[in-house]
Length: 318
Picture 1 (tube, rainbow, N blue to C red):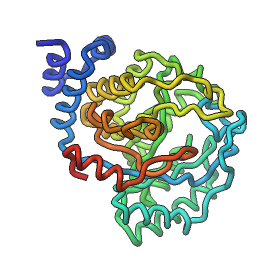
Picture 2 (picture 1 turned 90 degrees about the vertical axis):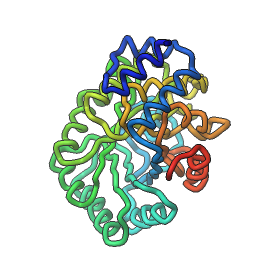
Picture 3 (picture 1 turned 60 degrees about the vertical axis):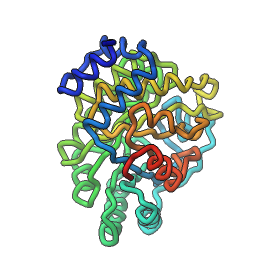
């Protein structure tokens, strides 16, 4: 029996692979690796496929210096700029998503954090949605403190998102205006406030496979339930605008390795899927069980109906 299937069988029995085993996996036959990842996903997650959507609830003028982001005021990206949307507008977006079959809906805001007044507005939005729909609510609002997170959870936010983006060792090459430890502390605060965690990163920024594996192991240690995998979409005006696109085979290998390390997580294709010729079909066949439908923050996405149809054609229950 080859190494991939040997390790797969151990994972199915509860074994947690380490960094060196994951690195070896990434060198194995990609087709065998993808099939093994699918078997792990079926064993731990079944056939259910998860659709979520986001709204850019506050856009642009961000003081952070993340090199991939068009919303940073420190680069020449062309992101639209506006303050926090009114509660009625945010609620309308969420309720439209619910009617389209979206399972969870997330409010994403630019900037390092939110003011207490902005948290109040978001809480008001959540209460309005709760009166009309049972859609799951998520939020991604930067480095909030424990009290702010508790208020959001009480208002109806059940899952909080804060991407690690990459490994601890590679992170300073991507961002220096906040730290890796601040991100991890935010996630810990959200868990202590009673929320599930959503955290992942971006691949294709110049990091190595070891960096990706290091990030996945950190996510495992944090108990993250939802892991968004973004593929860098090099945006003109950002410091990474000339970064070569990651080959599709590397995207598939990364997803499969993540499934070995995070067997029961919702591993979710997020940004960059629009760049792929099959809109992510082969990536789904590499161990995914979730996607973000609709537009991303500053780039186009794929509609919920198209995503649902694709998932169903692959044998998933949406």
